[in-house]
Structures are given as C-alpha cells and as structure tokens.
Image (cartoon, rainbow, N blue to C red):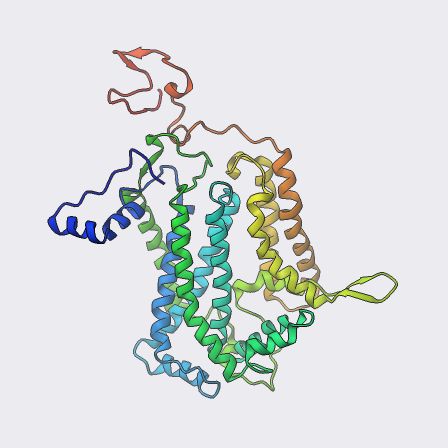
Length: 453
C-alpha cells in the first residue's frame, strides 16, 4: 500500500546511504513495519494476533532446532531421547515444554485470528489473496503439528499416527498403497518416524516462506479495519511505528505472561497422560484422541456413522469412513471459496445485524460443541451432538451465509475511518457549512481535516 502522505525513508549517515544503495534492507523494514507504513487508525486488539502468530512461529523454530540436536528419530530410542532431553540436557525441560505448549498457543492465536477474519469479513476483495494464503498456512500448521505429535513416540503418538494415516486407506483404489507409502510400511515404525521427523523439521521453514507471502499480499491493499471502510484520506491512518508497535508490544507482554505461566506452572495441562507411556503396538489405549486443536475436525470425521447407499438395494455409494474424511477436509477447504460465498457489500459484522446473530449464536456455539465432542469418547450423546454441529457448520457457510449476504439490510456505514473515530466531519458532510475567523468549521488552519463540534 502506497500513499502520497506516507513518510519516506531517508538515510542519515554515509554508511546507511551506501547500504540503502547496495542492499536496501533498512528501507524494506521501514516501509513494512515502520513510520513509512500507514495503518488505519481504528485497529483494535483483535489485530494483534498477526504479530503474535509470527512470534509463536519464531518460538517454535528456535526451540525446535535446539531440541532436534538431542533427538534421535529411531523407534527404539525416540522415547528415551525425549526423557534424556527432559532430565539431562541443560534447560531441556524448559525447551520441550516451551515447544509443546508453544504449539497450543500458536493454534489459539491462529483460531482467534481466523474468527476475527470471519467476523470482519477480512476475506473479501481486495484481500482475497491474503485470506487464501492464510488458509494455506493453517493447513501447513496442521500437517506440521500432526507430525510433531508423533515424535515423542508415546502411546498416543503411535496410535494417533496409526489412526490418522489410516484415514487415507478410505480413498478408493489408491488408499491403501498411499497409506503404506506415507508410513514406509504397514504400521508406524522407524521409516514413519524418520519421515515425520524430517518433514516436521522442514515444514516450519515452509510456513515462514508462506508467511512472507502473506505479509507481502497484506501490504498491497493494506490492513482491513473494524469498520470495513477503506482508507480515503491522510487522517484515516497513523504510522505503524510507534502507534502499533506499542500496541503490539503490550499485546505481546500479555501473551508472554500467559505463555510463561503455562510453561512453568501447568506444562502438561494440554497434553495427554498416555503419551508418557512408551509406544506399544500390542496395547491399544482405551480412548484415542488427537491434540486439542484437532478436536473440531476429529468430531466432524466421527460424525459420519452410516454409509451413503441406494435405498432398498444395499448398494453402498460412499462408505461412512470416506464420508468422514471428505467432510473433515472439506470443512477447511470450503474456506478457500468463502470470499465468493459472502456477497454482501459490507465487511464488518458490526454493521450486519443478521450476520452478527448467526455468527455469535450459530457458528460460535457450533465450534464449541465440535471442540467438546472431538475430545470426548465416541458415544452418546456426543455422537448425535457432533452430527448436528457438523450439519450446521456446513449449512452456515454454504447456505445461511450466502442467503444472508443477499437479503439483510446493513446499518449505515461511516463515510470514513476518521468519521467513525472522531465523529462526522462537516467538510465531508456538506460543503462550507460556515466559517469561523475565515476558517471552515471542519478545517484547521493547516488544511487538515478536524472533527466538527
């Protein structure tokens, strides 16, 4: 995003002038996160989560690289090396707990980031590419987290790998060969552990690359804002630094308080106790469950308990297992078409009364129900609740949202971001409503727009 009023980078010394000519990295940083990047002046703390997600990624990469120095991807010793890290490596316990809980906090931040995008329709034009790259990042995160969960080689790691890779066997014709190819055998063992470790180490750097594209795409149209109104004038923006670096710094401080509290006082609260038992292919846990951040999609997978068949013929068109797999992946893939499903010209949920009701009293309770059912045993009443919640989830995005976007009457939007923050401006609202001492009532002596009294 480039505005004529954006402050331009000016090297101050001979060295910075030479560096700017040969490798303009300071200019890049200045224009990306400095005073050279104008940002809507009305962003609230829901816009902190992008920076927090980047910080979480940095935590995961740094702690993961150090942990990889002490880990052995061998089924015979993997569990022991994790215990070695916890007991013998200097601050190994802290690194491992920071990495494990960092994954959970990463997903907490990303889920809040995504649902902020849902409410404020951050996926709409001209920001479709930002949204699409964000969904790609989420899918890469899920793959990375799954492979990382296998590495401790505890009971839940082993059986989680067995169950999740077993989903691919539901694909007709190529399913079982695909599962064998993924595992390197017929069951999780050395080959699978080596593959998952290699990919788990590589994927965060792939995510970092897509994050760069995500930020690059963001800087073309600029940040969205709570009103959904585009920037129209200089008074609609403030420089990213110092205004939003200070705001992000405060948010980061709150995040670190919560994160360190979890690492030091509740390090195992989000884990499963069975994963402190070494993997045993001959002993199946009573209740196989993935990490908590997979629970909504695991609930969707388990919601399909019957085959899709032709009535009275017994001919099965789609087995229940394949239906669950299609629905699980489809629940995320439909986010790719969300910019074209929601046709409302208004972005912000604050100005869409019908949309807001279905969001807070429909989508949010549905996601809470899926979270609960995904972590619960596959028994009643959780099965029927997950089936109802799954049905509403797809109904919301594929039917309700498109209909609402066509029939609802939104509230009047403010003319500009400045008007939303400071009140109506007489210069914008009506030409020359009056003068005071030779100056427009809504214009300062320097020509800048000011709020009317």
